[in-house]
Length: 153
Image (cartoon, rainbow, N blue to C red; front, top):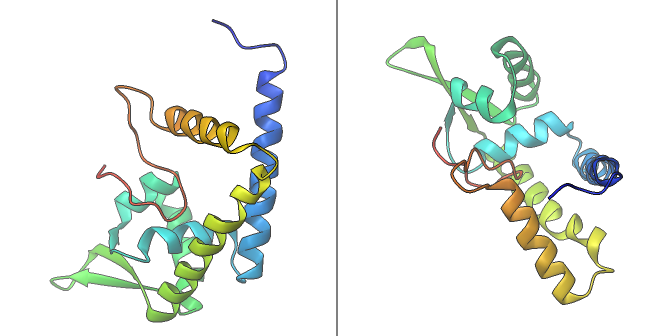
């Protein structure tokens, strides 16, 4: 079954609307979208650099710059194991956890508002379709929802 000719364009428009709302929510928390995604990934558990690079889709130099900027704000902290600086883990600071939790709650409340015009049945169907698109059978891949628990990679 092929999609209608305008379906790809509709998906791009939907992505733009969601990103615009997400960017607005992040700005209200004085975060860039990249900082927000990073905070949500480490707010509840430490993560290694390789895992973060994979989950965020960043090369290590880009990830290092993002972490440097977020660390300067006092929101995350690098820790090394056994005094080996090459094996670094990122954790949130108490302030980072607080901001990450508040951001996560805002995203959970405010992004779905965009679909408030749908009936309860339509919204349920939409949620199921989005979940199916994010987790195709046989290829679960990482869960890209901000702040969601990620599968081990």
